[in-house]
Amino acid sequence: MIISIIGLGLIGGSMAIDLKRCAFASQIIGVDNNPSHCDQALELGIVDEIKTLDEAIWIADIIILSIPVDSMVKLLPNILDKIDKHSVITDVGSTKFNLIESVKDHPKRKRYVASHPMAGTEYSGPKAAVKNLFQEKVSIICNKEESDEDAVRHIEKMYRALYMKIIYMDAKEHDVHAAYVSHISHISSFVLANTVLEKEKSASNIFNLASGGFASTVRLAKSSPQMWSPIFVQNSENILQVLETYIQKLTEFKNLIEQKDLNSLENKMSEANEIRKIIK
Amino acid sequence: MIISIIGLGLIGGSMAIDLKRCAFASQIIGVDNNPSHCDQALELGIVDEIKTLDEAIWIADIIILSIPVDSMVKLLPNILDKIDKHSVITDVGSTKFNLIESVKDHPKRKRYVASHPMAGTEYSGPKAAVKNLFQEKVSIICNKEESDEDAVRHIEKMYRALYMKIIYMDAKEHDVHAAYVSHISHISSFVLANTVLEKEKSASNIFNLASGGFASTVRLAKSSPQMWSPIFVQNSENILQVLETYIQKLTEFKNLIEQKDLNSLENKMSEANEIRKIIK
Image (cartoon, rainbow over all chains, first blue to last red; front, side, top):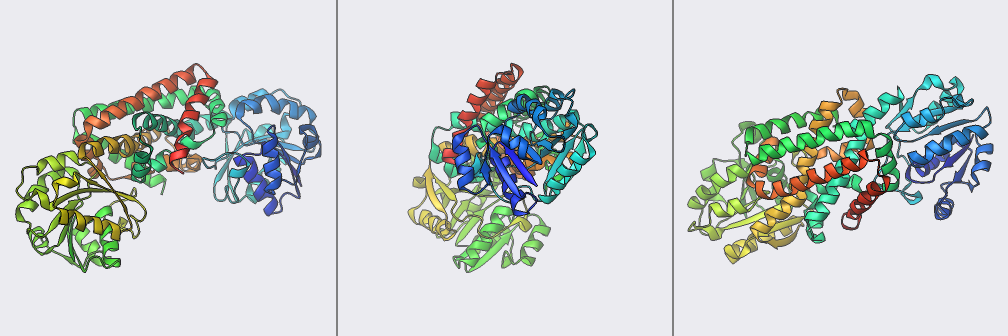
C-alpha cells in the first residue's frame, strides 16, 4: 500500500512513522509546502520520498491530508478532481462540517473519508513526530454513509493498524463535541499563558512555581498558532457557546471568592471533581 | 531526629515517606483529625506511630503542619504556645502572609519557619502519598529573618534531604507569585471541568475526546476542595487581580473568534507560545 501524506507535521509525521513500522504502508510519500520540513522528514526517515502534490496524488492508494483546516478546505476539492477511482483520501482535521460541505456535490465525494484521530502533543513540525502517538486512542469517522464502503474499510484498517479505537459521528455533532472538550481546553490554556506572562514578569518565578500545577494546565499553550486559528474560526459557532459558558462560570467563581464564600466554592469544586469518574 | 507531621494527606504523607527513607527522620509521628487517615497512614507504613497533637508536639524536633490553610491559622499559635525552645515548626501551606501575621507577636515566633514546597499531584489523602514527590522541585522559605538561624538551618537541611532547591521570598511577594502562577491554574482547571461537565452531557464523548488535550488541562480539577477553598479566600486580593485579567483576555479572545480575525488570533497564540522558553 502506497500512502501519500500531505503535510509533514506532528500528526502527518507520526502517522508516517507508525504506518511504515507496522508494514501497513509499503511506501510513504511526503508532500509539504515548507522545503525544510521536506528535508527534515527525509533525514529523520519519516518518509521514503518527497514528491510534488500531483505525483503524490497519482501514485497513492491512500492520501492523508494533515495540514491546517483552512488549507484543507481549499485543497480537498482539487485533490478529488485528480484522484484515481480506486484511491482513497482522508484527513485528520479537528473540524469536519466545513470540509465535508466543501465537497458535498463533488462527483468523487465517495472516495473521501472524513476522519479525526484524537491524539497529539503540544509540539509541531516533522521533528515533533513520534511513534505510538495513536495507540489506544480514538479515531472518529464522520458521515461514513457518504463514502464508498471500500473506502471506509481502507481507512478503518489504517486506524486499526495504528491500534486506534474507531467511533462514528455525524460531522455537525463531531464539531460540537470537539468544541466542548478539545477546542475549549486549548483556548483556556493559550489564554492562561497570555495572562501569566503578562502578570508575572519574572521568568524564574514562573519556572520555580510551575510544579504547583501550572506546567500541566499551560501545556497546550505551546501548540501551533497556524494550526489552531483556522480551527477556532471554522468552528466558531460551537466554540463561542462553550467559551461564553466558561467566562460566565469564571465570573461566578470570582464573585464567590470576593464574597469569601467558602462553602459555595467547595461545592463548585466538588462538582468539578466529578471529572475523576470519567478521566482516571 | 523525631518529626511530627500534623495532617497525613498527599503532602504530609509524601514528606513522611521520603524523610524516613533518606534517614533524615529517625521516627515519624503522625497526627490527623480523621481516624481513617490515621489507620491508612499506619497500614501503609507512612508513619511509625499515631499520637495526640500534644504528645506529637512535645516529642518532636521538627513539627510539620500540612493541613488546610484556614486550620493552620487557628492551630499555629496554639502549637507555638506548647513548643519546646529547641524544637522547630514549619508549614507547607500555599499562602504565607496570613499565617505569618497570626503569630507575628508570639513570644516563640522565631521557632516557626514559614515554607512552601512547590510540588503536588491532583490526588489527596494518605493513599495519595508517593515517594520522590519533591525531588528537583523548589521549596520557598518566607521571611527567613523572622526565624531563629538554627531553626531555618534545620528546615533548609530537611528540604535538601528531599533533594529540593531552596529559594527565599517575602511572604507578601510569595502570595502574589503563588496567585499569578499556581492558584490561577487551579481555578482555570476547576472551572473548565464545571463547564465541560455542564455542556457535554455524554461521559463517553468526554472520555473519547480527552486525548485531544483536555485530560491535561483538567487534571488539577481533581484536587481537594477542602484544601483549595481556604487558599482562594486567604489569597483573594491577589487572585482576584489575576482572575480579572484572565476573564478579560478570554473575552478579547472570544471577540476575535466572533470577528473571525485569523491574524490577531495567531498573534495572541504566538505570544502564548513564549511560555515554551520558560517551561520545557
